Image 1 (tube, rainbow, N blue to C red):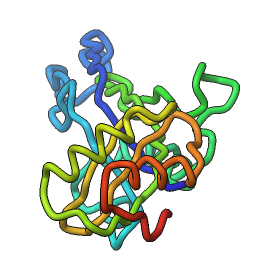
Image 2 (spheres, rainbow, N blue to C red):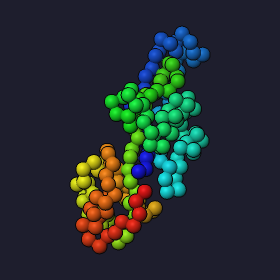
Image 3 (cartoon, rainbow, N blue to C red):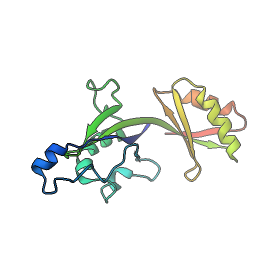
Image 4 (tube, rainbow, N blue to C red):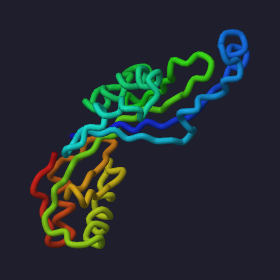
Length: 179
């Protein structure tokens, strides 16, 4: 099983009274770095390692300081906040800015990588994706043509044999490797 981490900006707050009382610029306003609805996906598979490259200006340092530990935990397949949230794969966290905090939803995404022989077109991919989506606990199938594999996202583990059988039932395709 592999893991990605999706981070979504769900809210931006502004405490004008605190800015007026404590800041050098009492009209600083809301955080200019993030926008509500922005999504960032982190992964560490197939030659990608987004986690270690994100510090180069892609995120505000204050926010990164607060959310990076949860992202790292998710990428390792760990419980982001077991016992605290109603789903250990999710966490709500905010940055350190006390006058204009940004609130993030952090989600661990579990998936398996399938290397499949015999795929020659997008119709093949769609046929296989449709069949895999009928399996219990499969939530999404994404083909990565550049890296030549399919990512099968799951809510709970799906046996490798079930994945292989689903692909084989679509025609002359064979799963050669599952990570």
